[in-house]
Image (tube, rainbow, N blue to C red):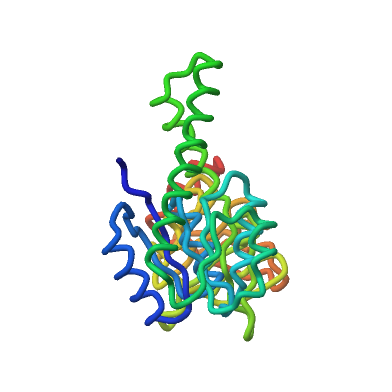
Length: 267
C-alpha cells in the first residue's frame, strides 16, 4: 500500500507536533509539507500537489474554508480532513466535500478512520483516471505524466501571496509586472498592488513562475516581459526597461542579459 502524500496546516506549532506524532504512530502517511497560515497553505498545496490535506479552520490570512473553496475552484483538489477545536462548522465541511471533521484533541481511532476514508477516495479517483485513460487509449503511466505536466503548468500560473499593509493579497502570476530585491526583502508590483513577498530570494520566486514570461534581467530584478512598456537605450549599448506599472518604473538590464534581450526582441 502506497503512503498517502499529505500536507499539514495549522497555525499552532504544538497542534502540528501532536498531529505529526499521531500520524507517525498510525503510519501510511508521508508528510511532505507544513504551513502555519491560510496563504502559505495555498502556496504549499499548489506547489507540492498532495493527495491529502489536514486543515485547521481558524487561521491568519485565510480560514481553512477559504483555502478549501479556492482549491475546489482551481479544479480537482486534494482530499481534505478538517482538524479544529470548534464543532460548529461541520455542515460547512460537508459543503466542501471534506473527508472528515476531527475535533481537537484528536482521537487516534477517529484519525485512523479518516485516513481509511481518504485512501478509498484517492483510490477511487485514481481508478477513474485510469478508466478514462483506457477509454482514450492512453497508457496509465502516460496519463500520470500528463496530470503532472498539467499540475506543473497550473502551479506556474498560480496565485501568489503579496503582503500589502496588514493584508495578504492573492494575485495571479501573470498580473505581476516586476519583482525587485533590496535590503533582503522582495517587493512585488502588480497592475493594482505593490507589496512584499514571503520568498527569501528572487531565485525562489522565479522558480515558481513561467520562465518563458519572467526574466531575471538583473541580479536584483525579475520582470514580466509582457509588461514591458518601453525599451530605452542606455550607455555602453545597454538598456533600461520602462515597465507598465503606475509609476512607469525603470529597470536596468545587466550586461549579461542584454544579449538575450537583443536576440529576443531583434534589437
